[in-house]
Image 1 (tube, rainbow, N blue to C red):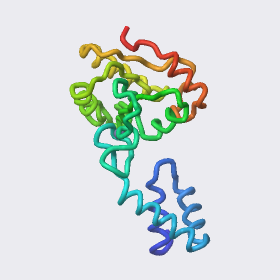
Image 2: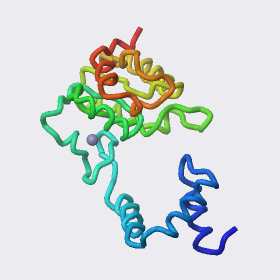
Image 3: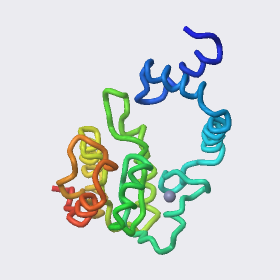
Length: 199
Ligand SMILES: [Zn+2]
């Protein structure tokens, strides 16, 4: 244990995902030795993101306004919704430039071990959109791993009864990873080759 502020910093850093006790200590000492102005900017960026950034009321993407730039853009096709797990996946799909529809961010994936079931995801909000908007196709673009597959299968089954066209990305994405790990060309191809998710 270190004294006061140093230990506080190690404890807080250690609560971040993917940061173990050793990494937390290494980062804390990096911060301690770094230029004070640089670290003030880091602290301000953290405060700024918590104060200014919220989630789009329509799709759940990160936004500095009530609705995100994509939902506000009249050039985006409102008849297609691409369902992703996290905001970072929106970015990954946007990089492909292969998609001109809108998004729905679930806020995670079904993961029974972590206690995340359908009720913890923004599925109710998706159903509300299907009632209110003129959606003709839902593209399921969850991550190509166990949790993502389980989530897509659940959604496909649920959406089947609604009568909307439901598609999934073509295979060929790196299995086990996140969408963001796929390069733009591969992800773009998976979009263009999407197939019906309702068997
Ligand atoms: Zn939005």
